Image 1: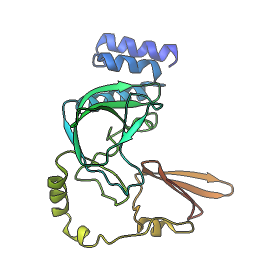
Image 2: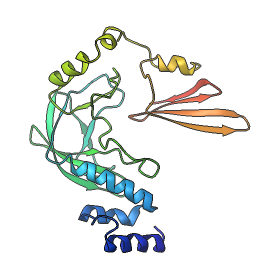
Image 3: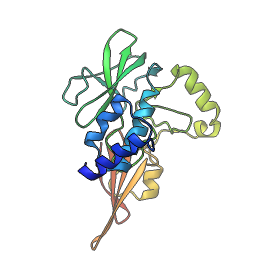
Amino acid sequence: MPLLPKLSILLAICLGSIPQLSFSQQKIVSDVASERQLERAIDFDNKVQNLIGRTFWLKPNLKAIGRVVFYEAPSEDAINFPVDKETSFVAIGYERSAHFRYLKVELSDGRTGYLQLNWSNIGNDKIDKPIEFLLDDKTTIFEYADYIYPGPPTEFLKSYWAKRPKERQDSKPKSPPRIGMTEAQVLASSWGKPSSVNTTVTVYGNSEQWVYGYGMYVYFRNGKVSAIQY
């Protein structure tokens, strides 16, 4: 961060126009590029702190393209391990590395793990869900994805589908996206609606990147699928 903006932030903190930062928030000041990013980072940090002490459940989807994994240490270079049977875990801490943020958890079998948080796009957007895989009542459930549940999975799914009787009745197996599909066909595929869309306009035409999370992307050129990444 340039010296003057950093000094202006610290002065504002001293004068009371920005709430006093926690110790973990103070460390964020060193690696954000603007006051706006600092605000997003503080908002993210507060949301993660609110997760500490909560219990979550994991019901692994062994057919999922993007599996939920835990790391043995708060580092992208650490060994990671998936969980292959239903389990619960408690959020017990919050750790950070040079480029990522991690939720420290204790699994029901006594193991400690680190869950990578949804931090990577903090420079561009406010992050609503620090845990990308966490289900809520607004989440659309896809057959290809792995999820973390805010409560016991059986009870959560019973309540979830009770609010969507027609959606469950119509939920027949669908095919994944394929090269050459139109946007309407991708929306009707098993991947459905993307979480966000990035558009590029050039003299050669328009292209779009549909972002689904879990490392999954669909690329369009002039209205048709040109590439798929997962």
